[in-house]
Image 1 (cartoon, rainbow over the protein chains, first blue to last red):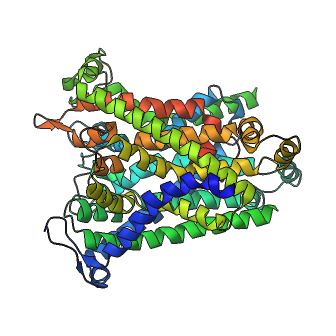
Image 2: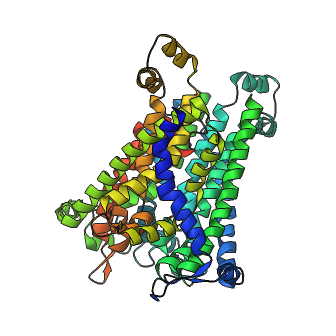
Image 3: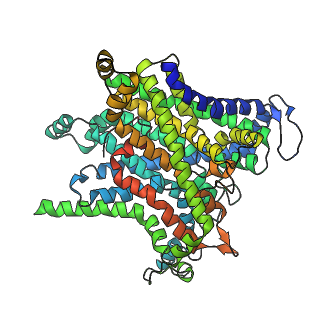
Length: 287
Length: 276
């Protein structure tokens, strides 16, 4: 009975995941280009060596790290502040519409968001530059200038995902028992003490899960950048997912790309393990 | 009266925050009612006579209607398959805890944590090899596979919350497992099923990369059209883009409005429950 119920999921899993992953793993040890028309040649660890010695890959990885750390960091701080601000919003007129507006950015099609931000950032007819010129500043080609492109993309990511951290903060606040809040009121704890002793004490697991999910998602960022800058200008916004895309589906260098995909897979497994670890930690604390 | 004044100010600030986050979306909606000259005007115009021409032209394009159909067809069929299959697996994981449950749950989750270009690379090679590229079956089954981890995680969480006493009572009274699942478990985990359906739908609806790589002319959805059909007659066709974007953004925004209480579960793989 238990096995029978699992068969469909296992079938999906084996055909669309296990077999492709093994294929990927195998290919990462071969020299194989789709454009050359030659059969794969066994190359041992050559692809991995090439990747680890490729300064471009290291640059893209460190850029991705900067993107993840600064993006998720700002989203967390801003999201917690806005979450605290929305804490007592129960009597807000039109609350549901307001929250829909606030939460909308995170569920929109990333490709579409990327597209309309390009319109907003446009150097000649974009509304942002019009505002800047209106207050006497000079216009900037935000996405086309290598000194501003990274920040411009980061701003869009922050716009998209700060609402998620607001949502997580509200969930963390909702998890605090009412009695404790009343006790904090009676004890006249300071604002900072309340945050630390009440919110962080009860809500820390939810916030940690939120930050982890955001870290993983941010590490994967692809669609948004694909349509805004495609990694450019130069490689100033090229995150590692774009690097892989370019090597695999533009240069068709499948052996090298497979090896990079295997490395990313290992990183993802580490993230997943951390996520599950926090889940168990929470379950143990709540038991 | 002082408190009431403070409350008004507080509410005004909250609305201001919501409007700031919505402003970029409002701008594309506004643009979709402009003529080409008005979109490209410097400085941008705020007041203008709205036109529906962009929408008329959008829906007159056969390619757009085809891609919109693909978006709907792919998301709905993939999600229905995924949730049905996942429900059985989640039930098995929750009730019988077969050996390797934790490991399988872990593997399932790791699929969703991998960058898309890494996940699609071997599937692309497989699809090219088997000739499955640009087929509806190939697309739907791949999307179903990709929706399974999320669905299993959400549904297992919900089924774990239903006491096994319900099953026992059913067994004692001679009900079959099928009857127990459909009559006692399913009604109690309906919120989980709805959340899994809704958020997988949004995922496939928004998905671009996989469709672009393993799809083709026949199966491409609107996001693919949006990224690859940006240019017409030398420049970006912003009237077309803004109308298309506006139409496409409607379902996700409606989901946030109508399913607000599932948002938390849906955005966290079911690991965080509650309402905001």
